[in-house]
Image (cartoon, rainbow, N blue to C red; front, side, top):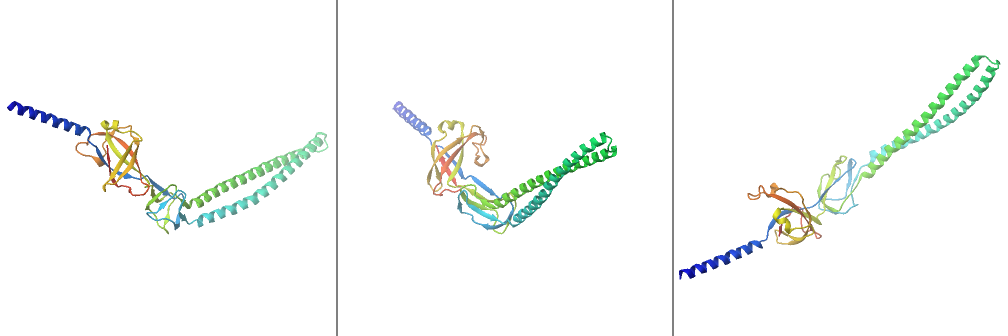
Amino acid sequence: MNKIRIYIITAVTVLLLTAFACSNKGKVQTYTTTLEGIAVHVPSLTGGIINQLNVDEGDWVTSGDTLALLDTRELKYQAEQIDASLQELASQKTIAENNLAQARKDLSYIQDKQQRTQRLVSGDVLPQQNEDDINNLMQKSQTMLTNTSNQLELLKSSAVKLQAQKKILLKKINDAIIISPAEGKVTTLYYRQGEALAPFANLLELINTKSLEAKIYLPESMLTKVKTGMQLDVKTESGQEFPAAVTNISNKAEFTPKTILTKDTRAAMVYAVTLKVANPQDILKDGMPVEVQF
């Protein structure tokens, strides 16, 4: 009777262990993380007072939308000054070109006269002093021609410099129209209408919440169960499930991030796995906690 009882107890134990092993083998692993949107900071490439601000926090913008207009009066005044300087240089350039043409004529005349004087001096018709005088005039004419030519080149270089400065000003005037570089929701406005915006300061932050990312950290033993392109679901605290796809699996192991440390995983080496979650109806929010199950 005792042997029969022992057999029954043994059989039950084996069945329980088998069931327990099977249940552990098919156990679902749950990972908790938060959703993140890709943030884009929109800077102002030039400075100025915000004359017009076309968006507010929470607004959805598309690439190419005009976000703000800055005051450009000072930049336009500077451009007008450059235009005046260019006109002045154009007049000076005309004068220099006329002087250069005259210097060439004078040099040609002196060269002819020098040749005649040399012949007369050689024939003892004129004294040597006449040749010395004409040679001196020849040197002066050559110097005048060189100086006039250099002056003309200097004026041309100054014009090129001013034109480059004007291009910079025109770019700044164009940059005063701040255009959205991407699609997304305005999550943070750093400046308001009427405030002065410094060059390269961020006007606002955009986050495209129609496509969010979730990052989980898996031990090496789980890597065989995941691959790029794999379809999964993320679940919110309210129980809603949304489809997600694995977009990247890190090739480098790292220690478990401090934000998810537990006593059991304090020293564990894990691999970051990034998931992309479609959110076309904008139900999910940036920073929302979700669960991912394997």
